[in-house]
Length: 366
Ligand SMILES: *Cc1c(COP(=O)(O)O)cnc(C)c1O
Image (cartoon, rainbow, N blue to C red; front, side):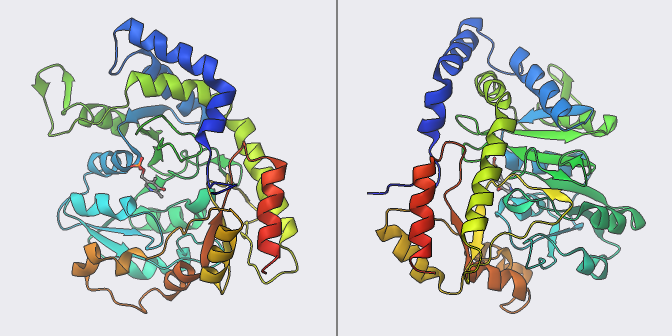
């Protein structure tokens, strides 16, 4: 039996159940379930939260990236540069469009794509860069955007783990040509099902994405583009609106927990998250680095503390990408990180007692 789980969505619900139940019930009574008032309001609220002109609800974080690339005309034969140290969705969407993922290794301190190595991978076929704000810490956007601007590339941020994070005072979501967010339940702003959002300042992209998510049409049964069915539904939007009001407070709590962990693990062999001085991360994960990871996992498990590995296999070594021809040793920083990273429980409702349980369990071994 575990005393401290990685995430506790029941504890979160306990604090907001009345408001959630009321919002859900209102939607059901309204009889409007797709692209209604709640979706529109949430789109405005997220756009305002991210300082962007547009927010566009879609069916998932994966679709947010997919539709963003589609809207930017990424297609067969194109190359898209991204990190091999991320969740598979980031690179999967590139392949779904017939384009080729081109990986660039990470900075081992931040786990984000290393801008120093992007330029050398740009070819005449390169169309886009997808920086991932991994664990909730923004990638080095100024340097990434500089690489892109010089070569006419679009930049699609993958902010699935980073809603609310700031880079040099800017919100994630307002820096790239478009940005994908995920409302998967385990993200910082989680729905009770799947959901996603695209933010953009580009009017033309917004218009196209609005069409793509509903079968390429603006007027019912008139189809100008080949699109798909990818919409955020009213129930999820109503739930997310209740939660969005609390997001800043929840983020503060995550940041406080991260600070306490980092303080507690000082003067140990544990490598705690490195935060760039210009970043304000939101800690979707609190991920440490240790040599004897398997030993620590087993030890924590015995103490009733759940952990997770984000991610155990870098994308270039996944069987699904074997056709790309990468081999072990191609991205040593990602490979090393995948052997050493370990995510500890972090969520706003984590109690001080639970936090102490995790800390003393970790310290009794490290
Ligand atoms: C969760 C996640 C996604 C995909 O989001 P879904 O809503 O699950 O489709 C994409 N990229 C990253 C980095 C993620 O963590």
